[in-house]
Amino acid sequence: MINNINILICDDSVLVHKSITRLLQSCSNATFFYAENGKEGLDCLKNTDIDIMFLDLTMPVMDGFDVMQSLPVRDYNTTIIVLSADVQLTAVERSLALGADYFLSKPFNHDELTELSQGLGLVFDNIQPTGVDPHLENNSIEIMRELANIALGRGAAIISDHLGDFIKMPLPSVSFMKSNDLSMAIADIRNDHELIAITQRFVGAGIHGEALVELHGKDIHLFGETLGFSQTDEYKNEVVIDIANLMVSSFLVALSEQILIPFSVRQPIVLEEYMNLHHTHCDTQNFFTIEYTYKAEILDVECEVLFIMDNHSLSIINNKVMESLH
Figure 1 (tube, helix red, strand yellow):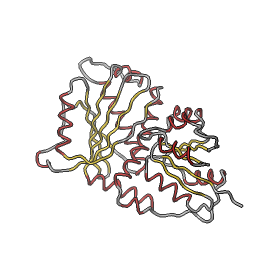
Figure 2 (cartoon, one colour):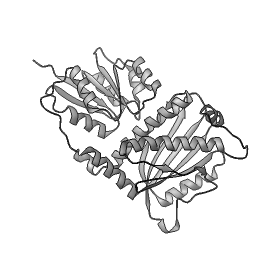
Figure 3 (cartoon, helix red, strand yellow):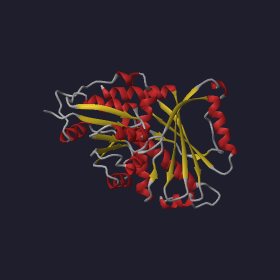
Figure 4 (cartoon, helix red, strand yellow):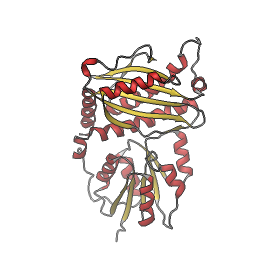
């Protein structure tokens, strides 16, 4: 008699729900449960005997760290598999210290996850399905949100390694923005004299975009010095420009690895010196945006980043993702 195994997938990404389910759906003894944030995950654990929980670290309402700190919620042994884009060494160490049994990085390796699942008692009846989930075909926002989440995790790890400080992983906001809204946002940035804003353009295989980086906090220059950046001219924003360049390039490197498109970036410059994002003839144009904020845990510094691309660039990225899945 094969015992049934209840699996909870606690992740704010619908794509992750579907990807894990598709990989494990041929298991004859698996029943799936889903949660889109940590609070929903805890509620499920309270009401159901969950044998295996796939747990994301970065979620709205309650993140994965808070979930593990809240356990146990009842007397039942649940195997916790952290599945996260946050691959900072500190994130791995904290997860294991809080009771995680395994830590897998996103994007997860199918063979590794299948082998682990088999070791935990799942029984596969046949070969796992291949091909593309139809849900992906017309869901550019979901695709980009997951790509951005993974890129942010890689970027945070790069910055954390240089800094020696834990970077709080942000939830990326992925959406479309009208050109007049973008113009208003830029005007607000330029009118805020308490922050420094940097702009940097990037291109790659038909993709054209611009990144805006805003820096806040009293430890900006200490943050830069810790990263190894120096200021040689007190009247220039050399450290700030170097920080902005690291924020943009670390994200693009990680995105490039996922979609196999190399990016080149132009020299970052202060927003006041150059801005060419909006034109009078494109007042009705929509832009695709990815927005997130990196925060250091110890230092008082906050970096808000806004990536802006046109719809043509978004189509190129989606096509590359679909090609890799076939």
